Image (cartoon, rainbow, N blue to C red; front, top):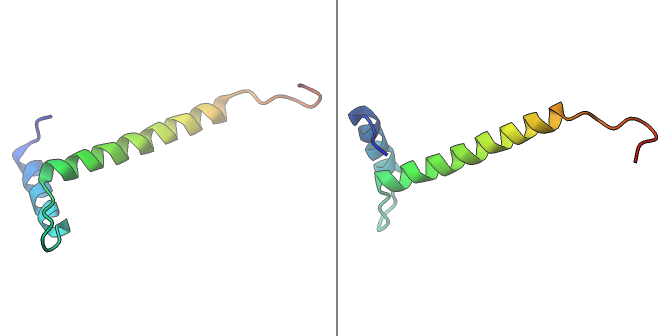
Length: 62
């Protein structure tokens, strides 16, 4: 997935900040993690929205 140079530079800077001694974080690893988190959050929000729109069963049903 291509990124703008500005986004890639930001990912690089963030990855450098997040890396710890002896363990480097690559910008692509950070990007993948952010995408995974974003997809999970978006899916959860969509599922919650769908659940809120479902008609609720009235009394005596079931």
